[in-house]
Length: 222
Ligand code: GRF
Image 1 (cartoon, rainbow, N blue to C red):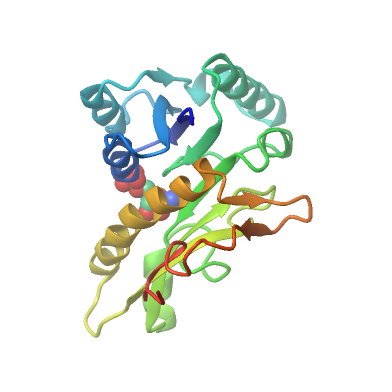
Image 2: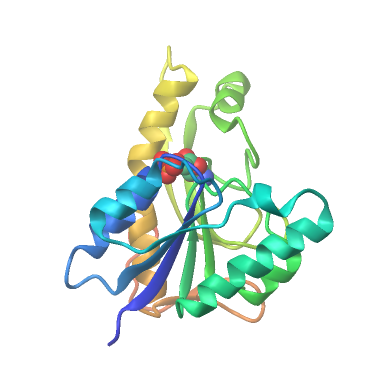
């Protein structure tokens, strides 16, 4: 089967991008990085893409100005670039832009995000600080399909980690990030193979033979 063409959208350091690059280096992995797109010209993740020989593109949101029209124009440029590259799957990986409902609708079922909490808890920003403040004992990360409302789309996979006494936000973030780097490639694999999908009812459906441990990495039930 032809490999699925993945675009990874980044704004920053790109460690999740790196985990996808590394996964795609395996000949048997069902996807390839066909485009790395950033809204920030200086995003360090662009160097990771360059080192891996992946095509890169910068669409600087600042050149579009502010307001709803600017946002729509930026998203239209994004969509055009993705279509031009014949992208099958779009992976948001630390992409710090809120996408318009039109964009989300257009790429529905083909648009994934990773978030550093066990959604639906702790949507939004400053997640690690907020989790420590709240005193949660189990944290983790989630890969989900993107819907119009931020961090609210149907969940594909999750991985849990403990919050340990004495943890600060950075320590917790590092523990979660380690799982993010396993979870994103695992979830992209399931979607790229067509073994998991977003249904018209807006839920994620898995083939019967998908092991329970495929979308739930930690703890591993299988
Ligand atoms: C990750 O924690 C991801 O879950 C969140 O943004 C961060 C991006 O990190 N959406 P990186 O750029 O992939 O290193």
